Picture 1 (cartoon, rainbow, N blue to C red):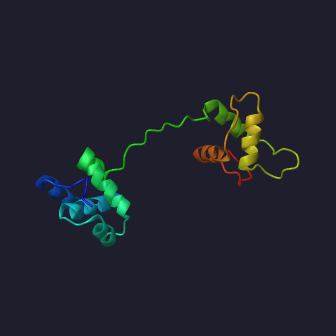
Picture 2 (tube, rainbow, N blue to C red; picture 1 turned 90 degrees about the vertical axis):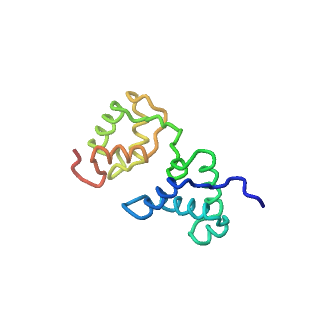
Length: 154
């Protein structure tokens, strides 16, 4: 089957990739991608490249395609993420969470758990959220250096 995306490196691009592999500390992904591009430019097939470098054939195809469509830098680096996550825990919610952690746990519980904190946070009338994950609670506690295992928080 004829390849749809060909890799034809210029002398400058080839020299840049070789320098990238020879010196300094680079991300492993970038180094693999540079090796893929160099081997593709030398005429290796996708299967040969995948066997020589422990990567999948689909990875080789993806790197070839990205090089053909977007150029050298785009094929070396990870693409930017488009998704933007809306934060549920702002300063007000965080203050209520810290107050909860420092208060005694509800009756029937020996200590606060992340899920218990998340449930109690949603039940508070002062907090304008419908749901919150225990992971969001964990990340906020980590950011504020609070620990559920510590007897004295704060």
